[in-house]
Image 1 (cartoon, rainbow, N blue to C red):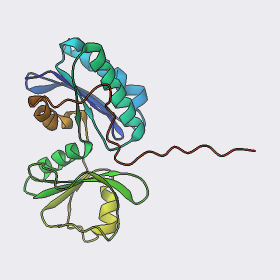
Image 2 (cartoon, rainbow, N blue to C red):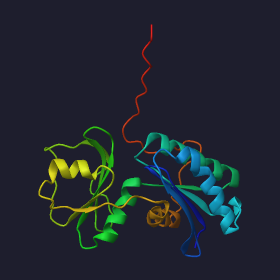
Image 3 (cartoon, one colour):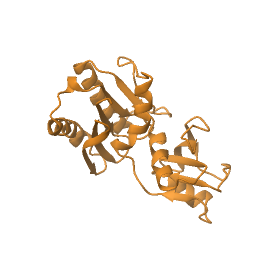
Image 4 (cartoon, rainbow, N blue to C red):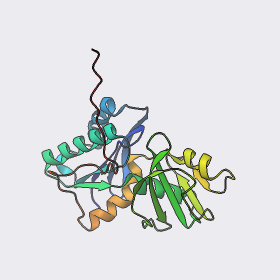
Length: 224
C-alpha cells in the first residue's frame, strides 16, 4: 500500500489527509471560505508531524485537479508541487468533479448516474456526469444552467456547490436526489489509488490545474 499525502483546495473547505497501511491515519480540515493561504501549508506539516513520517518517506502526493476556485487550486497545486520537487516523489492529480460523484454514490448507491456541479458564478457551473461505476459519460465542461439542458432525472443524484442553482432552474419538482456533502481530501483517495496502480502521474514542470474555463484578468480602471 502506498503512503500518500492528499490535498484538497478546490472549494471552500481546506483539507489535508494522510493515507498509509490501507487507511486514512491523519486528517486536518477547516470549513472556512478563502482560508487556503492561511491554513493549507500548516495542515500539511501538522499531518506529517503527527504521522512521524518525513516527506521523502511518502510514495506520492495527491492534489485536487479542479475545476473550482482559481486561487484555491493555485495554492494547492503550488504546495503539492513543492513537496514533490523537494522529496523527489510523484504527483497525482484527481478530478474534483469525480471526487464529488464518488461521495454521492456512497449516499445513493442505487442511482444510475451522478451529476457533479461546481459553482462558477451567475447561472454557470462546471459539470461532470458519471455512471454508477464513476465512468465519465461526458467530458467535464463549463455550462450555463438553463432550460436547454436535458437530463434523465430518474435514478440520478446531484452534488456540488452548483447543485442548488441546478435544482432551482431545472428540478422544481425535486425529482433528483441531492447530496449536500462537500469534498474533503480523503474523498480523493479512490481515483488516486487507481492512478497510483498504473503510474499515472503528472509532469511536475508543466502541470497546471484543470480550470476548464480560462481565467480573465482585467486591468483596473484609471481613477483619473
